[in-house]
Length: 341
Image (cartoon, rainbow, N blue to C red; front, side, top):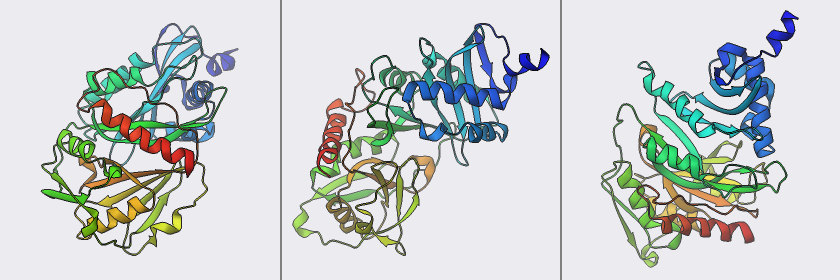
């Protein structure tokens, strides 16, 4: 009887942290809620790995329970240079994920020893039927908490509990406890192309405190420059970092992977920046963000989609700091890619 109570503790309607129920039960609850919400959640698909991450201190889950039933979850994910808030979801017929997320963030705020910045990928997709969409999280993180957006990218995909599988645009954002140095050129000159999204990029530079002025020039004066990259990761998407000793970017154009999304980061201070950016655009990339200040010298973030289903983007009212039309413009660019690439 005592062993059964340890495996399935009887709990009342309250906040529960993983240390109170153990790594195995925490992992079971977390993966179960995320599976019911998203159908498949690539970053939390292995219950054993989630339990290992909890035991190692890399993952700190939070739950609200009613009786012995977890009704929502959230988690802090501890990375070498940042702390991520994520894994937010409600169980079927549950609620409270947004408030639980605030409580998890509050532990980061009150931890005087923890000085790593808080980061989040804020889901902006329109809801599946019966599933909380992106608007609540946007309002909470970008308004109440004051997280600063860096990029708008269709980086992740979810099938929902009943499908269909689809890519979704996320707002990459961060919040610093200690202001990091802003390392960026005083001026950026880029080709005058729609895929540059110059007004959006200038807005993001300003919001993040980069004293950088963006100018665009006609592409007749621009010479292509070979762009080589290293593929650093493939889960949950392909991540390419500019590298002079890497592989030409065009050789990655037809990669078939778990996700149809590619993320490319180019050093903003490169002496051949204009030519490299033009090469990226010709290879199908769209400039849709900048790196977070705490990540060091400024990089420009480009996204590329292969053929897939892209979820509609659902904007909150008065999106903080960014003209909604600029967000919809990026959505349309990726939507066109998703239909024909």
